[in-house]
Length: 459
Image (cartoon, rainbow, N blue to C red; front, side, top):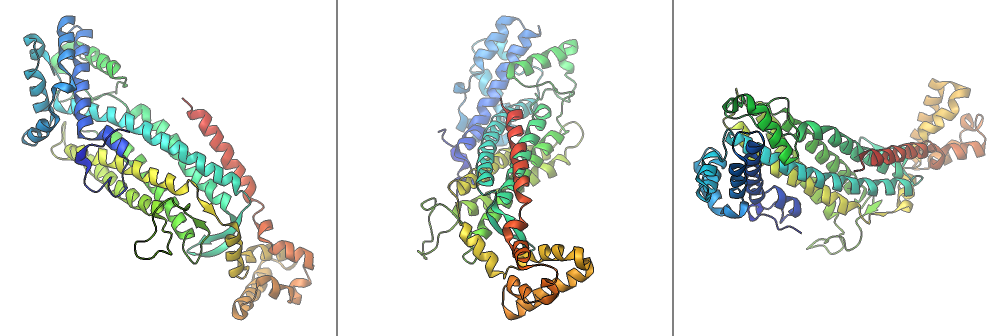
């Protein structure tokens, strides 16, 4: 596994809120490597477009090697320059043995071209990492949905028991969110993974008529697409990425929150697998849902960084920004790492999740079976009309609550109910399993959409 850049040691990884392997690929050292890669590709592109002789292009590419750059020294010198590219180019030129190549190195580019394109190369790697994690999470959710298609539990609205649902349906809803994130990512990639290259103010004027050729060659060298125009101060692509990342983080926190609420002592319907995480340092009886806790924390941190990215996009003045774009240098890699960390911890929370179907049934009974009031009113409506049926069920439910007796028991004693529904029909109506009969087909539909998504997004 790649070693994370030590500059990420800000509590992000130590607290379990990040993804060390992704941190290694989007951190400072990796950014320097990518910037050098872009400079080398530019040298080759200059040769392909006929701006410089092939020998000079080859010499530029040879000079642009990451092993010729002292990353720590560059980090120390970067703060005194407007961008880290300026000392980087200086270091590459200083180690270039060919004077002509040294003169042409970085020709026609502006620092932002190099920084942005390097960032997009890192984003491309990060999106593969994130999509892989989402795909694995989707499979876990699909497995839970299929296994618990008919596992009845209380559906909860506004914090209280509402009507019966199945745990499989809840997992299917989680699955739907994950699959939508994957499809949105597929739609986002073409407009996001583009080269940034416009020169000083986005005109490529230094190349004359050869500008489009240099741009196309550079994009081809790096495996990126050619944008309609340079996008130095038009950061809607980054906004789209931030929105997608924030959506992933919000999805993670929603599922993690569901898990934590299900795991409360008084609910106890779900449990983190034994040995999957530590309990409490002071209270040995506790089995803390540590992965879900960490997932929620990481997701909130990720959305904070996404807010910085969206907010900065509006402050890019004229052709090049002073401050807003620079904020991306920190916020973008951090948003990627924190989102990946949130996703990883949610996957850990769901892997081996223990589902207590008996406890789910018990909690329905503790609620006196009142989650079936909607079904009872529906069964009485054809004979009594909706207003009268609703009023009758309200009266029966009020008595059940006042006397702490099951709805089924109170309803069976009420002649107004039994005059309409015979005992067998009443029992079937109040059985939670019959109430959730429509949940199974809904789960099946979600699983079918998932299978289609997997096929459509297959490499």
